[in-house]
View 1 (spheres, helix red, strand yellow):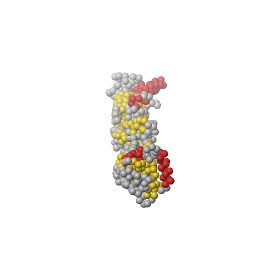
View 2: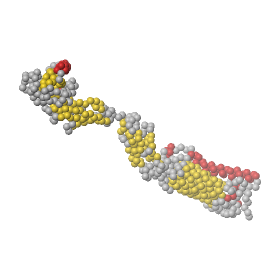
View 3: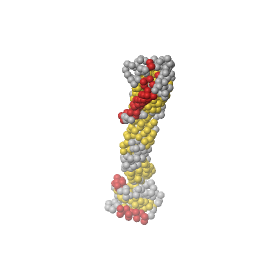
Amino acid sequence: MPVPRRVFRYAPHHARESLCHARKILQLVGRTLLLAGVMAGVTVPSVQAQSPRADGKFYGRLGGGLSDFASDLSSWRPAHPFGGGKFSRGTGPPVVFVGEIGYQFSPAWALGVGLQGGNYPVEVYPEVEGISDAYRYTPRLLGRYTFAGGTVAPYVDLGVHATLGGDRPPTRIGAGPSVGGGVDIQLGRAASLYVESRINLTVPDDAVDGAGGENRFDVTGQLLGIGLKVHFTTPTPPRILQVDGPATVPTDTMVTFVATVNEEDADRPLDAQWDFGDGEAATGRTATHSFDRPGRYVVSFTARNKAGSAGDSIAVVAERPPEPARIVSARAVPASVAAGAPVRFRAAVTGSDSLAYEWRFGDGATATGASPVHTYDTPGTYAARLRVSNRGGTDNRTIDVRVARPAERDTSASAAGPSPTDSSTTPPTPTGSSAEAPPQERWGIVIASMSAEGQATAVARRYREQFPGPLRVEVVTAETEQGARRHRVVIGPFGEDAAAQRVLTERSDDLPSGAWLLRLE
């Protein structure tokens, strides 16, 4: 007996079937999209901070659940599909099994090819002659969009399918759209659990159940399913091996920070970003930065790729740079001295922080400190060098010191008193002595030597006013070994060289830099 292709012959019956069918479809669509729609509006703060989902990987999905079926036949019996004990064709429970392979282009987008196979037992199959098999198979192609990249992520998908299976005739291959939705719960870097629902709208109307009607379609759905999604290739997240940078930096000075990550193993692209703790940021695994204000800053480095992220930080203290060391003045007192006599070196230095002094006297000897004393044993001209340094910088200065031979008795001077030599050259050996000088050793300080007697007298008068009291200032006229007549201004005499040297050192600020000692008879 041929199967009737039109089931609805009367308008009242036709309207009732249409309402039942529409209600079935709306219920399926509502169940399918309800879970995805609800989860899309749920905020899960605790999971949004998790590592982002991997992309650029192939995956596989395998699951199962409860099947659902809506068609012309099922609309005849309102008890469909779960009336309990009424299945007369197709034994077994209403179950569905799903498999899919695909590619995750990004954390949000994926494309998959899958197969849904299910048992759709319907009590009205006997009314359509020739149908005894309730299993149908639905290959499909789907595009999937995931709303969030945290641990719990809702998704929806849309694609096309073909449905086949059952007895032939009267069933045949049908096709149509496939719509689904659910949530994906991440279990780890390579696996996740999903819960979903789906409907497959199939045309023509008689392809699945063998019963046709006007403007009808059948639905082979997955009422509720659960499964496991596994990535075939596991992405490698970044791992920070070391973050290098200075612990203390001067303000307004560019410094470099370097991060070492597992570049050879981590998936690309690999993004790197610095946060310097002062509102400024930079990208790349090497960055330079300067801090405008003093303070303690936490410099953070973060590396990200499609598999996850990693971060590390170091503490940096920014300080005002110290004022660099600078030598204002440096001198030797006296600058001309007899061999064996002490010379005091002095320096006026500016600069913050601890200042380090290093003296090199030119004869191989060295000293530290701001005001060392040194004795030259050999006559000659020496270049004494001073180096002062601190954290801000270094400064250098050179001082010339003239060292003469030790003084001898003066045998060519006039009877007027001591006969000093010319202070404008290396101190000569005295050539005269005073007729009235006592036989014991005496010393004087020569502060000037000039050819004009009037000039020497004026100098002596000025120094007498400057040195009142026991210190005598005299003008002594004598001839040098070369026969030149000189008028020398001499402070003294002193009973020993130590007394003369003490006056020369203590009154160095009041004496000319060329003053020197002379032994007198």
